[in-house]
Image (cartoon, rainbow over all chains, first blue to last red; front, side, top):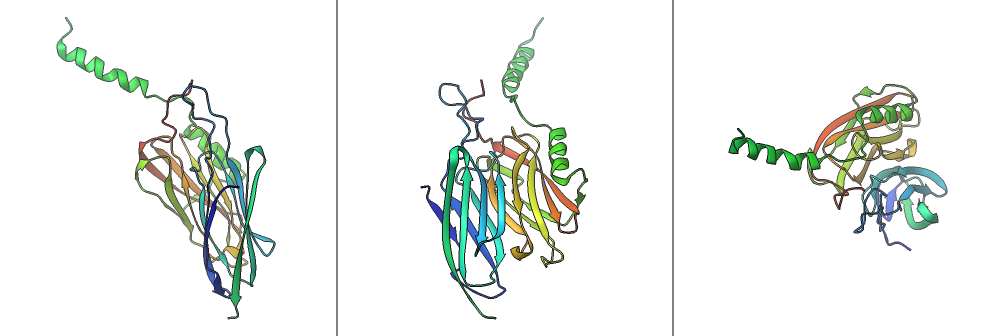
Length: 108
Length: 150
């Protein structure tokens, strides 16, 4: 399991736009970098990131080798209801990881 | 007769030749990649703000923020943002998918840049139009500098 760091408010008012910052520990080996012996290190990257809010996809990203190691993605979403935000990363060689964060939304 | 000055000049030119990198995308490939993203539509310039340092010390992790001027309502919102480059080994950098529930059309991430080049951020709006902003950046320390590809 890769380490992840997700920053988002635990509480929000209904309709409030919240910022979510997600970081995951991953080398994002591009496949273009030679090792000490001059041979190319095989590609090993994360290819997709998805954020689901109570099951509905609110944000996703398709990642390529030009994304830095330990991919950091910051985005916004509207707090609609209390529940769970699910963050999932998929990558080469069957990499898959999902993290969950709770959110409490108070009425407007 | 070869003067000392000419010899010195010839010597100084040699290391520059060795710095030419193999395998990089080209401006034409970037145009083709943007065209593939937009489905052949030429993006208009504007609406997109591409926030990146013009002079980059380290190409391994370059913070970028892209924001798009949009009310982000159910009728009118940004549906996607993509970043393209001219001279990395691959033209695609990242493609984000947004929606009306994003609330604010702004995304940030960290990218790799192989060399000084032109970048383009393209936004897709819910009305089917495409907008872009290009920037030229200077990269001092390139990503993947450890050795040359064989």
